[in-house]
Picture 1 (spheres, rainbow, N blue to C red):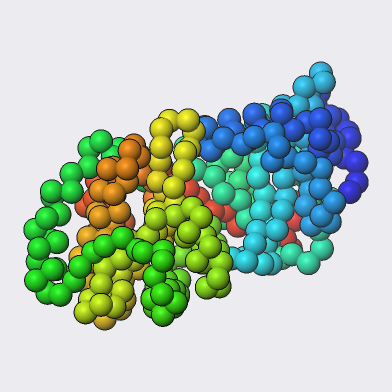
Picture 2: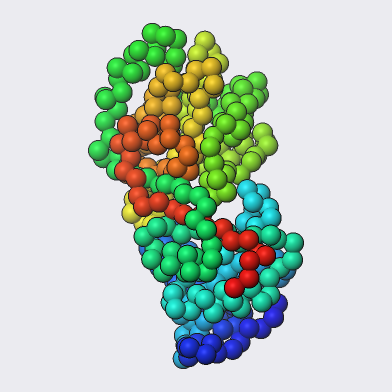
Length: 317
């Protein structure tokens, strides 16, 4: 990687490649850039030998005050590099121009992700010729306010029609796991998504290990067959109490429109509440209006939108 040490004409900042000694400062800048929505430990930031990754920092009087990172976006957009920026917004443009001067080969576009109330990043992407390509939403629920009693009538109605919600048994036989996995794959194929909300794909053995290690899954059965599911990732976030994160929720096409997604998610939230979790999070693309309605009915409160910005690499500044 080239050393980009230089002083932009309109600042006293020097731009250079990231070094391991910068890890604590960069972790703080990146955590601050997302308003503490996630907490990034210094151990996450290390010098990379990956030729497709670039991280630069901007230094003023010996202090790292801004950073920019390019990395492959991943399987959801294999032709794209992701651009992340944090710190002093006045230095985003010189950092970006330095990255443009040394782009990894083989990519056709840049993608950036920021929340609409993160003013510095939003202003940069707009000014740098990116287009507002996709929007996603996040939402949270205070589990102390959740009342499963509101869904008893729905549960009784569906039970009389042959549907029964229950937790997934991780000791289920292989045939049951296969049926669950097929339903999950159906959801992966059908769910509206954008590059930011495209989930990782797991083959069956990894799917099983992931659920056993870090998730709780709830299903709705119809005549013994799983026809709806929802996954919860379990864990702490931000030090604000125990939180569950809702992952993919799926209803088989033949059983949609009956309220199964609402029922299975309500059962999952009731379990989390009774298991001393205090908050629940979820999210997805704004294109998925049915799931937005389900989550609103469950009591989730939506946050500011996340915006995915796109810029084709043939467009030069």
